[in-house]
Amino acid sequence: VTAPLIMLLTVYYIRKKVEVKDLLHLAPFFILSLIFGIIAIKTQEHAIGNLNAMYPGINRVLIVTYAIYFYIARFFLPYNLSALHGFPTLSNGLLPMEYYLAPAVIIIIGALFFFIKKDLRHHLLFGILFFIISLILVIQIMPVGQAVVAERYSYIPYIGMGFIVGYGYEYLQKLISKNILLFVLVLYAVFLVAISWQQTGTWENSEILWTKVLKVYPENQIAYNNRGLYRTEKGMMKGAFDDFNKLIEINPDYKDVYNNRATACFNIKDYNCVVKDLTEAIARKPNVSKLYNNRGLAKSYLKDMAGAIADYNKSIELDSQYVDAFNNRINAEESLNDFNSALKDVNFLIKNDAKNAKLFNSRGILYGKTQDYSSALADFNQAINLDSKMAEAYSNKGMALLNLGKTAEACNSWQTSLNMGNRNVNELLNQYCKK
Image (cartoon, rainbow, N blue to C red; front, side, top):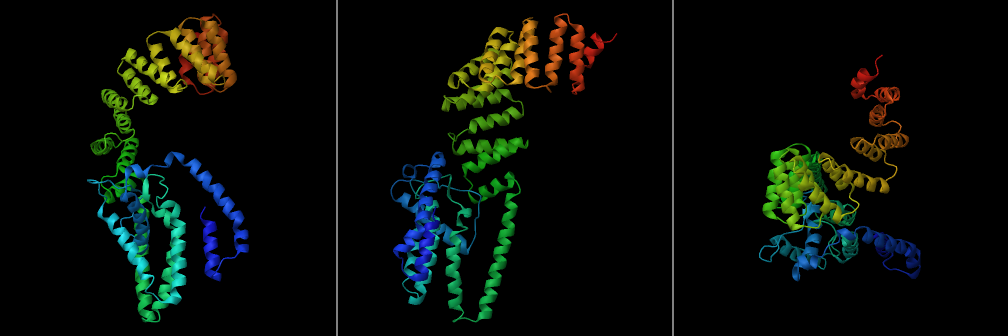
């Protein structure tokens, strides 16, 4: 998106002027820039925030100046590197001190421009403008994403900074011994190599990654949430609970935090804890379908089938196409021997997904439980038509055939299921099919 402006800047740097023909040559690139700019905005609409509400008045300006200062400072001294630099927290309406120092640093740098030799200003201006233009879309003038700054945004802009340093190095060679300059440069390069090598270890896994973020930003909510999710996934349950508890302490309204802690509770089979956390989540966000579905699942494990069905009903009321909620309600209805309600739900799912072999197999099982073996057989046959390698459907078909008095055909169906690797039918074959 910024490439045409960089091209125009380069033309000006080389010729010290821009002609109409240059604009005509670059016109196609500006058109592409506009197109891809619109595409970027459209695809990231969900990530565009309202910083004016978060940081009113002068604080909004300080966010932008801090971003510029950050990239300049990290170019020379890459300290406190982090996978995520979250937006700052206001304390009594004030930003961290670094944000107030940023404009002063930028003003000082700007003032130095007028004190350098005139023949260097042209080169310095090119480097500065290259740096600013390349960064212009990611310094939160248009607020996007969850980070106030990100080191990865600096790769191209640092070409401009490197250009300035290159001319500075060339100029200093006239004032200082080349050997001394080279020695300093080599030391600095070794320092950068060491920092880079150290930083690569940060990305070994999410535990290390988010722990490093928390060392730099001890109150970062995203880091606590993401590390908690990783620890949950890896079975590090104490650490996961510590992270979610700390996050709730910092911000009890953080998105999905109670649902995430409930997932950790679910992993240790503490279903009362799941219900408690999801009830809290629902109280804060009463119109989120998945919360009711998840609480219903926990209630079903606690054998509270009536409560589970009530939650599934609410989940489906909020999202009439929520397949997981339908499947869970079917299981609960089946456990209560309410086969008619279960069949009604399966019929709805089949109507919306008529090529799903598993649904026909499930409905066949329900028909079998109502002793409608002919309908069950028809559904198992349909499941096999849709998925000829579904061993379970052949096994179930055998049971329907047995109940219809067709033992020989049942044996053939079980044998097919066994040939597909379903050893659960061995007992049936031994009981009904041995002559």
